[in-house]
Image (cartoon, rainbow, N blue to C red; front, side, top):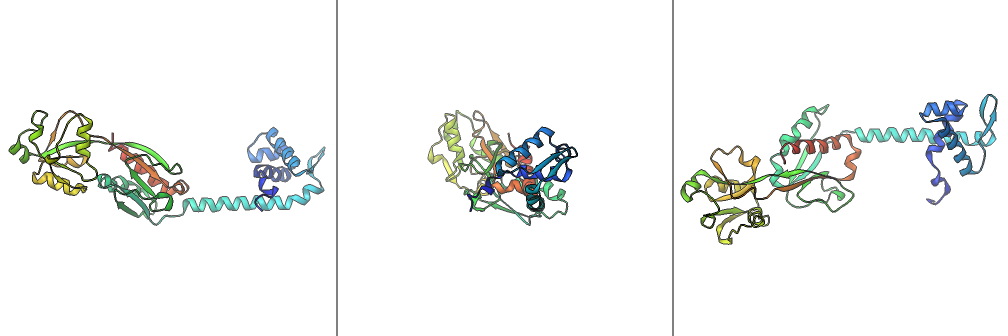
Length: 299
């Protein structure tokens, strides 16, 4: 059935046929469609060639539907009405309120998103936006609708996804002032005597230091946890030095920045979404707001 010649028919040609038949002239049909006279004439010629019959009689009063044209006019008008109905349904789907948007985000960015998305909530016409924020370091499958939108640290391999790099998360080394008072300043000369806090599977500190040509021995890492909350609590308790986002350290009055050379590591942040997000005005507004808001917090 899908190989039927009707499926190869260009809808634009039928639309021009309906407009010209209704207007009674190429000029009138072109004007109503917002296309040029030569384009309308070409469309009619292409349609007649594709179906193998002439559709109009050329008279001094303009174009008049011939017998074949009259026979096809009703079917073409139905196609035109169906196309308008399809467009109306499309507009309805695009503007239909979304009860909830599901956003997947790693813990290292999780605390930023409520503030970033608050503007979208308060400016929504009926303030109906509801968010399911899945804080996980696992990569959810957007194509299988595990989430609508995700923030990732690597460019996704699935080409179908919406994707853009929104910046880099700036990291720094920090220690509590009580730790520094006990163990001294953390510098290159005395690096070996200090204690460090790092992740188990995401060892940003050790890897970042190695990238800068600095060696931190395994025994110097006195606490390992993939939980940022745990790492932050460990810094507050004076366990040692941790690599944490600058935004997280900013409100900590008793934390001191550690300058070994430069930043430990800056983490790429990619904003991704399932392809259908572009078809929903509300979902796409959230996607756009996330990109704009995060850009203010990233480098």
